[in-house]
Length: 356
Image 1 (cartoon, helix red, strand yellow):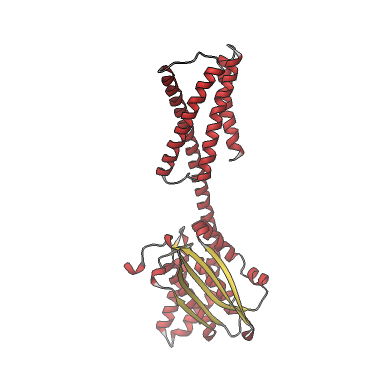
Image 2: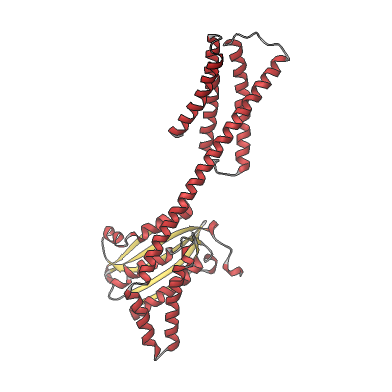
């Protein structure tokens, strides 16, 4: 529990004690002791409930479980609190021993009073935690949006990069005479990439199928740039294409594969995108060859793209998603194979695309 909580507890029950002493403390020493021990009882039980509730992490959570837990603990606290209250009246205030059935009614009255106090306190505590959880969720959403805007800005800069734009226009121009349909197709693919980045890539999450369509268009444009030096392989089953992921995530990985991998190799290479199911996750992989380098320099060369991707994965899926990088050196080819694996939870998938 935070220091703020304990200050709030001390202030609430401390004020209760001060008011009780101010109103009744002049009568006797017993009254003063009673009005110190009475709020101390409340402080002990409410602190116990708060710590127990926080340990079980029921806020925010299923309302049925929270209500069941609250009713049980309020009842236990009220039953014990009622007994303590009778003991305080008997041994601190030196009141005469009550006889049956009056003692039962006094006990029930005291327990009911405690139940109301603890119930109101627990309600206020839960509301406070719900507001705090909501504030954290809003903050996480804002961080996600800021992160996505940064990723979108980088993607747009890459897509509007003079080399990329020149490649798209020059490639289309070279095909106009010999292959008009091919020229139109290349310009259409460039437009697809730009359209996705400026519209569908702005949401909080994206569907893999949409992301994959934009990435395939991007890789096709880049393939013309490298001619025979670059090939593209995509093997993502239909049943995996409904999974959700942060927008522009796959685009970022594809750009890294081209910029930091294939483009730096004289012999070029293949950019491969594949997926497989493993337990409750879909493993999305992007593979590409890259120049031999030390691990530190290689990871650093990828810049903030992968760091940004990890942050957006955490904001969207929490601990249920992850991103890992693996390298497999190939000294004979003077290169190494880079594999970026993104684990995405199946429970965040949409309906199967094969359904319609």
